[in-house]
Image (cartoon, rainbow, N blue to C red; front, side, top):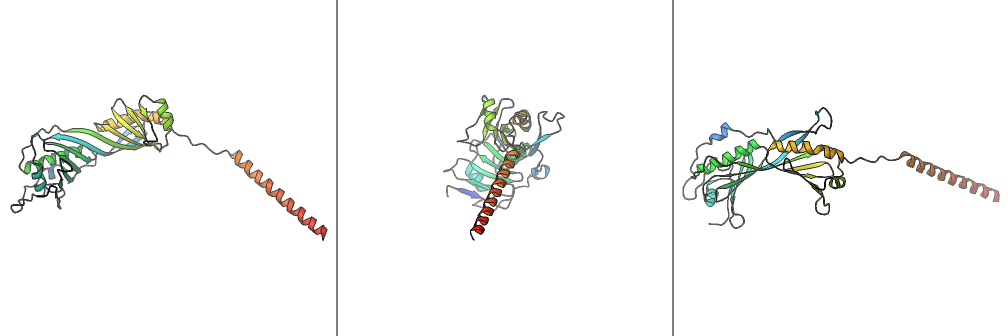
Length: 278
């Protein structure tokens, strides 16, 4: 048998659609009860944050788009990774390169790394609801192929990554100078400013265009609370565009007109002198 095992199929839910055994005909697995009772949701993929009272009435809100949620769990049982790769669809296993089975779901769209110790890491979802649902589906798949994972999986959200846009450019040099205790900025190595907020404990990647990446949050509310705290600071270091001076432009135009007039007079004098010679 080859050291690398890869199974794929038309089923959209990992190994839920059925199993394949090399020594016998295909055996049918019972329908997944989670498929009808729970469905993926887009709720929570976009959350709102206050502007920190900049507008006074607090009506202005900032949108944060969740890009990825990483969560972990422990099934509490040793897993035969080769068996999982053989019996489940949409899986990859190459022990020479990585000591975990990679399994993918389509609904919700998620990717799991399953280790022989029974620990699992799920990424690719964009809401905590879908993270919980994906973990339950992976638990169901492992149970249906012969393992006995414990019901309490010790599910934890480890990291939430979100993005936002301030809508205006930011003076990163001034920001890092005024907040050197929390910020670091080395444009030679990375174009963004790194700002570490203490409470909630998150990290901002701030770019001069006003785009922001927020990472390190454990809850969706941490993203909103962190941006609400930092937004007034960003407004303070908003980059102001310098307007052009019309007097200088007018002076240039007047000088050019005077030069053209002088050139015209010289041409007229030259033509008159030529006529006199004739």
